[in-house]
Amino acid sequence: VITPFRKFLDQLQKHKQMHILLDMSEVRISFCWYFTVVSSLKMAHLAVLIILGLLQYTQQLPTEQVQVKQGSEVDPARELNLDLLPSTTCGRYIQNRIVGGQNASLMEFPWMALLGYVGPAGTDLHCMGTLISARYVLTGATCVFRKVPILVRLGEHTIGTEKDCNVNDASDCAPPVQDLDIEYIVRHQSYNLRPNQNDIALIRLKEEVTFEDHIQPVCLPVTSELRTNNPAEYIIAGWGRSEPFGGVTKTLQKATVPAVPDRDECQRTFEDSGRVTITDGHLCAGELGGADTCNGDSGGPLGYPAQLNGIRFVQYGITSFGRICGQGPSVYTNIAKYIDWIVANMQP
Image (cartoon, rainbow, N blue to C red):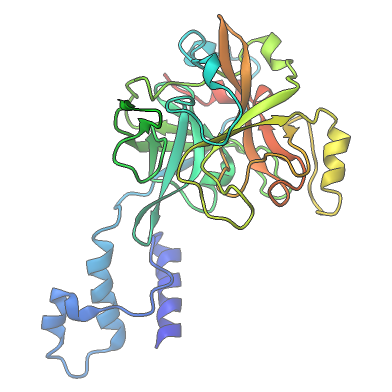
């Protein structure tokens, strides 16, 4: 009975686009009010009972699927509105907080976003993004490809805590997190999972974000100077695994990683991986045995402080892919090559 039932769930999910618990092995219909109706039908078909039981379960799931649109090509004749991206209210940089260590300081990276997906026991948080304006979150296309997020969480520091406070001052606490609904998603029209090209997407929120101390946008390389800037090192942040087979970290982590400007050197790291091609749409950073992004960090930021109406934190890359965590440089989407695409696919 179990195997046909799982096949039934697979078909239901495929054709109805429902998120179903694929690992369910039984439906406890005795807890459904429908059971009292059908129990008197001695010859009721098992499939009928399954469907009636699922009705109770699916009532608790979101009724609307978040729309994923294909991005638009950049029209050279169209003037891009760079004012859609903030340049004077972004990338708040608190210099004395950007230091070595594992745990990020409270509100050190207020642009960090977590993506929420329908999971077996509620909402699963496992991909990342960055707030780039009051209405948009930047992330990787990987994060909106096989599964589609239903919400964006902003202002998080330690997952699972009711209140996030400074470890050195219990009175210094951040306001509550904000879970925001998604209006739609724009995935790059030429995204290719293999060989990992154009790994970039935009999430448009249903409502504008109210900026607070723990929720602020990051800067992007909007000027020609920033687009050609090549820092010797970068700062990464995320809640991913701290080691290849370890658990996901609860508290936001940060690290500094060296840049790998030589594309050929980066390409050699993946020479045994088949279809990986490093292009100018990628950035490489990290080293063997050093700090690195890891599983769960996809969509997160790679950045560094730079001059933009003062010293501000600028995001240069989006975490895309790599080898086993810490086993060589990781690869990031090169945002400088996609600024025009980002702006062309944003609305006021």
